[in-house]
Amino acid sequence: MAYVTREHLDRLLERALLADDHSSLARQLDDLAHKYSEGDVSRASILVLAAEEWRAAGQPARAMDCFQRALEDGGEASIDPRAGIADTLFELERPDEAREIIEALRAEPAIQPATAHNIAETLVAYGDLRGGLEWATQAVLSCDKDDPEHVALLRTRYRIRVDLGLPEDDLDALVS
Image (cartoon, rainbow, N blue to C red; front, top):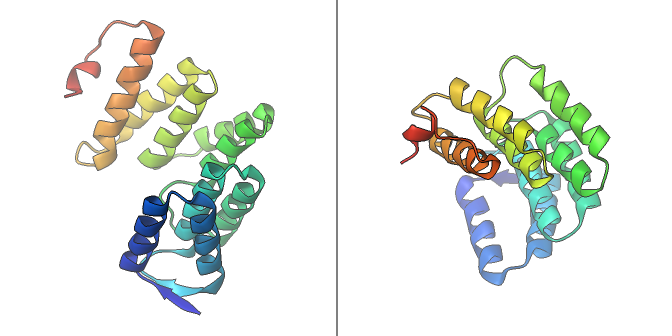
């Protein structure tokens, strides 16, 4: 069993970034999640990272498995694993299923800003600029201005509005 610290995870990520080897990092993170007992970082968070690395390595089926395990684990993660599942479903050319998950998330009372940002970016990546703008706008309006995600959301929202050819509004003026 492994006790996982933020420093341990950071070292793994740093080495993998230097080697530019997403498959190796995904495998290491997946193994770490299997051996996990406790730590500064939740098992769900490790599984979400592993899933993102599997996607970067061109292995969406393995990513889907990790996102699903993160969801089942129920621990705290950087994003709701369902957002990653939806993104992966789009990648697997299953857009109807992806949109069902996104609509289920929309129906929830409080979505983490990072999850909403992820969904906005996913929708934009798959051609739904209006949907991405809606998610980014709602996230900006509900996000605490001190949250580091706030500025990132403002920038994403601005970029989407520019892509849509919309004029600048009051929220766009906050982008610095």
